Length: 182
Image 1 (cartoon, rainbow, N blue to C red):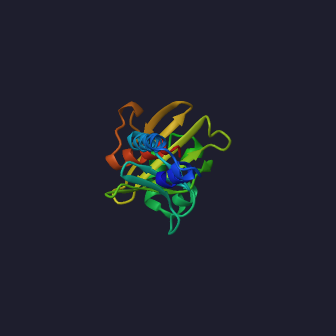
Image 2 (tube, rainbow, N blue to C red; image 1 turned 90 degrees about the horizontal axis):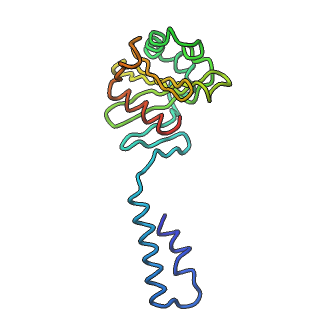
């Protein structure tokens, strides 16, 4: 892509024959662009419902039983519904039954684990309050991050939020979804 951009906008665009100095300057500029783009850290990229987080991927579920939003995931995945209800019984109703606004169900995949991820917020209050919920079907591990304004807290087994340490796959899925802005 960078090469195409340089071909369109670089030395080849000039109608007159470039001098050796102009060519050297153009190539030096092109090399600088390539080095800058290679050296820059790669942030999470959100494209059409997908995000990359290092070697992992967060993708909208496009086929199968879990297609849809958080409420649908609760209705078709009994293990997820049980874990979610057990961990959110002291939370607001919008989070307990995902009755507010929920995004599409997403699947986090790091090559070793696949984790279901749902983003939710109370209707009309997404700027003030929102949650990311993660569930790993193969292990039954569950975790959630709830944002009350700028403050984030973790939900796991009714423990003190300051003491929560999620299982590795859940932690990675929640971090990826947070980084991607879901």
